[in-house]
Length: 83
Image 1 (cartoon, rainbow, N blue to C red):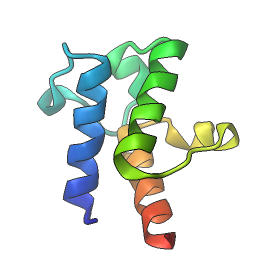
Image 2: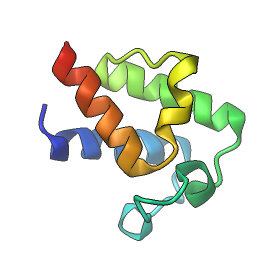
Image 3: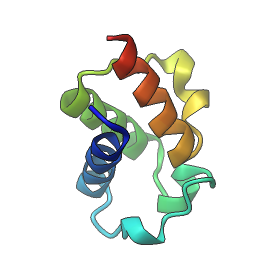
Image 4: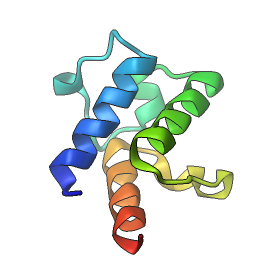
């Protein structure tokens, strides 16, 4: 899966949790939860949706690595590349 596909899957999962999100307005270098106003339950639902879509298990210990959209995409890219 290439970077564009990962981004598409992430944004679709995000819109499934927060339909009001307009992906083209997101600043990918800012804290994602703040950008889309996700509370802790929405964040967990979003991560579960990513797991279903991409098959990537994201342990709670790694949540700090997912602060921004850029960081999340890089993390998922590494995890998918590692198999």
